[in-house]
Length: 293
Ligand SMILES: NC(=O)c1ccc[n+]([C@@H]2O[C@H](COP(=O)([O-])OP(=O)(O)OC[C@H]3O[C@@H](n4cnc5c(N)ncnc54)[C@H](OP(=O)(O)O)[C@@H]3O)[C@@H](O)[C@H]2O)c1
Image (spheres, rainbow, N blue to C red):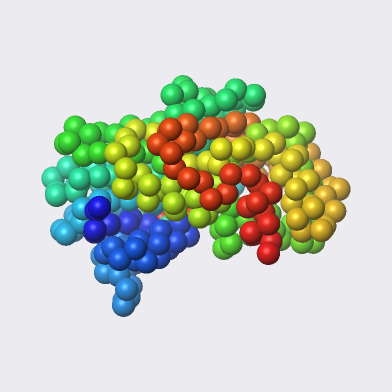
């Protein structure tokens, strides 16, 4: 078992939860941040994605850094999406390649598959089209380069993570609580979701098992947006009578609406299933019961 784990983006939502889970298991965590802080439980080191990074004493690195994508895109933001993912990962790979680090788990996203309608997508499927797909392809290419230095690399193709305090869940919850929920567009698009516990469980599984290459971090049962809407409306005992037309979403969210909200991705966690990872939440109903309890 790798005892000492460095987390880039440890201050983020997933970073905080992963840190807590690893500390609970008795491992040592080194958090990397642009703005390190004083902490009793873990050591913080400064790194802004460029220049020197001190990886001494770190056996594995989990890279969870990245400028938030779920906002209106413009040229300046796109430059930051690229810098905080591809440029940062390239710099990280140069540093881990010259260090004692044995393993790199690097963030990616189901956005790599693009809009694929009804097609069942596994890790072996070809990348799709569009801005997010291209961004993820470049991100994974930058990460996989660490294999040249004999480092085991996994690219974590994460779906929409549902958990308290997470951006996706808190937005959905607020909208439904005010009775303003409704399907997005025609609601037929597949949504690859994962409960926060399985996102963290899946990352730790990759840490401890001999997997490499892309790993889909999604539940084994994706749902259509209209099913999610119906189940949420039942779980929260609120009506869901306000379908949001695609053109309105595009007006408010711009390109992110098309690539993030209206896109259809029926993603299967084939690698995790084959490696017998035991999902805690396989069905959305079960996950929503937990999140609305
Ligand atoms: N949450 C999801 O549903 C989801 C889904 C798919 C993929 N992902 C990916 O998983 C990763 C973690 O997600 P998260 O929800 O934990 O994100 P988050 O809460 O926004 O945290 C991301 C961390 O990345 C660092 N960061 C942000 N912008 C940066 C920039 N411009 N330059 C350098 N570092 C920057 C920050 O660390 P410091 O400020 O401390 O430096 C921040 O704490 C991201 O790469 C995200 O794209 C998340």
